[in-house]
Length: 486
Image 1 (spheres, rainbow, N blue to C red):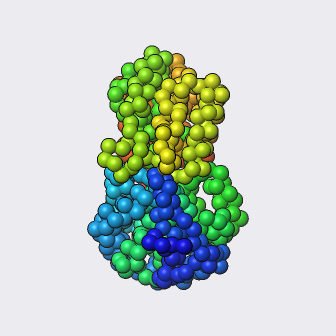
Image 2: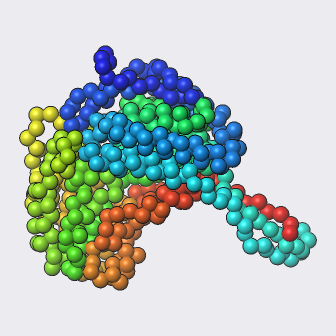
Image 3: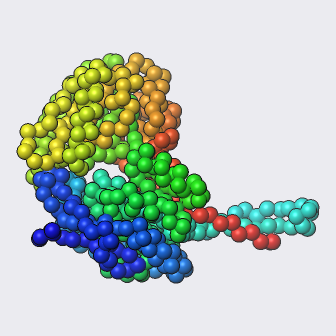
């Protein structure tokens, strides 16, 4: 069955375990060739992983924060030392370009482990309170301390678009806070997450602190959520799946961190630097081939700049090389699967039927193998079209015109989503004024760049909670108040 391809095993309670459900094929989306064989866990094995994490929680949470941090630092070093082989695997699983696989996948993962190897204070003094005599006792001064405590066992369900940075962004702060984790990677590209577990094991993570279980069956994810040993679920993925997870968590009052879908509005005003706007919006076509929830996929262009912006975006999309992600001049690799390619293409066809103009792309690239979608620009859209309202998750950008500032803000906010929006304007005061009126968890002003210490998360159906930087330490902790008489 497996030939020369690597065969992964589950990682449960510090041991590499044969899966009850056998193995399934992981396919390279660029070549459609076999990358390796991923393990299919049973429900019992997932629950065993959760039980192992529960058993390991007490000792791990009581270890000094400096010792936990040292494990993360060693893991960061191991990952960085193995950047090339790890990136080659990530590229084979995801179809990412070489630069993205090395820098944005493996490189960011190493940086996130390094970031949370920095010990931060977990206690804060609260100003004393003077109480008068009453039913609660005699008059006196009450001191108080706020203490950040670990939540317990955290199930981390991760996305397929970045099998390194996304899991690392959950695992590292969770472990730093003293939690233990059960990681359920996306079924399309789980092999990289097993390499991450390998690095953590070598770095000295005790048995049960990190567990990885995978599978294509919905049952695997369900078991990782409904286990009575799990205290919190951290999920990155679609809003629809997030809603189902939230229902299960709600019944048991499990804590949640949800990073869900997006349909980011890029509001481009007449006075914008069009070169900057085109370069920023154009990352939707190339970065992960548009498979990223933070992408500025819904462009709102003020009338005075609309035609020029459409022309320049179309020209930009037309210059991008689509093809083998291992070639150095490739800008746009494949999407993750044949099924997802079909989904993206169906949205392009839907846009045509809804009355949009295909200003660039719209045709499948002429390759015999690989799940390629050409960068596509849909112009003359209205905000009530499905292509403007639903997350396509591919290299497709829609453009909607607007007249004045108030209309631009209203159209931007007329969305079920609210993850990251963008504003391009030469008037900085206006850009900040508009940003504060946008109903989104983040706003980029004249940039698609990120500050990796800034809180990350969404409004509305884009999620619940915030992470990144110190905010992730809050996300993976409970706050305990300790009060005493002064």
